[in-house]
Amino acid sequence: MPEGHTLFRLAREQSTLFAGRPVHVTSPQGRFTAGAELLDGRVLDEVFSYGKHLFARFGGDALHVHLGLYGTYTTGTGTPPPPKGALRMRWEADGPDGAGVWTDLRGPTACEVLTAPEVSAILDRLGPDPLRPRADGGRALARIRSSRTAIGALLMDQSVLAGVGNVYRAELLHRHRVSPFRPGKAVDEALWAQMWADLVTLMKAGVRMGRIVTTRPEDRTRRRGAVQREDAHYVYRRTGLPCRICGTEVRTEAMVGRNLYWCPTCQAV
Image 1 (cartoon, one colour):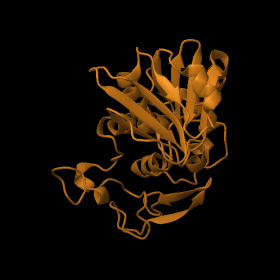
Image 2: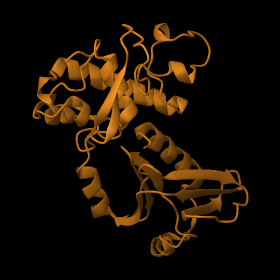
Image 3: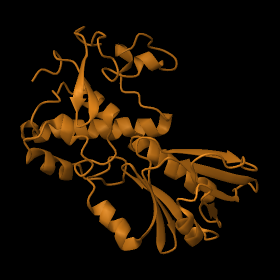
Image 4: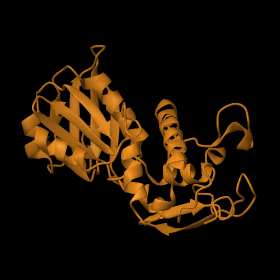
């Protein structure tokens, strides 16, 4: 599932290409026909992300998209290709340079037109998004400190923290030597302040680079040049490989429906 930095980049791209101009909205698949007809030809005001949710404002209405596990956008210029397969929604417009632009959405969990109160209801049930200006990490801490649930599960709870997924969960906990099985109430304020600040930095770097890189230069096999895929993470998808810090084999097991990765030595309970 795309994590928050991916949605932030999508929102920025769509705003650049489509905001301020009429958008031709269709649903070749037919599952979004009513919504497409409601939005078709209207001027797009803005696109913004919050956590793993994408919102596109068309006047008093907003398109809400949640990509889920399988949703993808494909964007191009010029004449779009003939629609094929399960194409939920297509946007077309005159681009900022006068050339045509288009974007196709396939396989989302949610694609719906909402009113302003309905958008607010979604935002109200989400925790702070580290990529939003003036996001309050203290809100997340209050939920974490009041819970006996494992911190590895709490970090994936979007009502606690919005935008964090499996990669950031595993890597943030390893960077701060925190066991994913530690109860939330055992995470103190000083530790969370460090984790929150680090998470903000990591996710902003993800926006900038278009990928998640969490390793420090001194912990990579190659310390110069572009970061190779095998050097990008400490524990994520490194089951059975030696920990970059202590050499212990990285372990994995399921937690809240996703594979969890950790070092049992660096992240002892």
